[in-house]
Image (cartoon, rainbow, N blue to C red):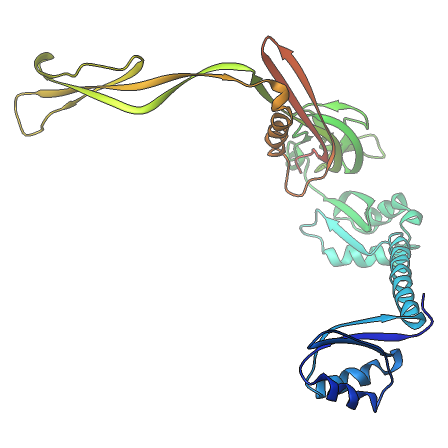
Length: 375
């Protein structure tokens, strides 16, 4: 690092001599160099760079570039770099600290009960806002004792929210069959469960299939009785999506060349009364045939039968798998990606290749982690 703290300025313009002379009367100029007839470069003291730039602009010269060197410039860059790092560290520390606190209280399941009353009561009975020091069982007891309209209540800490799920008092016949269980929407392996309300039917590590029950719509209260509730839970699972592509190293394709011939025949009561046929000169062809009414204005049912002959060519395709291996794998991956949700994170992907008598089978699998419940 240089200890001369200077600013290097490159300028362009005519009559530079007069402009530089005027500049030298007000600031010291170092290492003056003329690169071309109308382009020159020089250095000035770093502390006088702003004054120099102002004078140059008044002289009518165009500034092509400005750079700095020396100790002061290096210190400025270093301080700027460390400032970003310090700011990042402070932001991370602030996030980690605030993450330990509950910032929001949500009440679910209220119809006739005033939600604000529940929130105010909860705030008054919270011994702390720290997530790990909240006694959810004690809160459940206090809320149920204070509000007669509530038949059951569950309290859970989810993220930075305190979720209070209520069931208002209902007649027994109104409760029967009201709620449905949470069932899986996908096949996968469960990795995380956050139960808010209901009775779990699965645990972490279980393999489930689409349609399996995850949470039953009831709870067992302190008296051992089963009470119907709306099941709520966040259940994450590793879900696998697989697509298959087959590649044949040799296959035959039949393709039309674009050439065709048409033979026509007029029918009356399905008897041929006129023909306009051409000799078919194609070695290989395929045909299409259709019949239509010749005219709708005649009583006699004349019909026109047309036979179209399309010339075809037989093409042999020979393409060794190793020549297109990466392309086929990419196609299999793209085919699998269509199953993913928008902005979904891929946690793993792999593929297998099987060979079977001139045919290669590529199975591409992508693994994601998503909520498999239907609530």
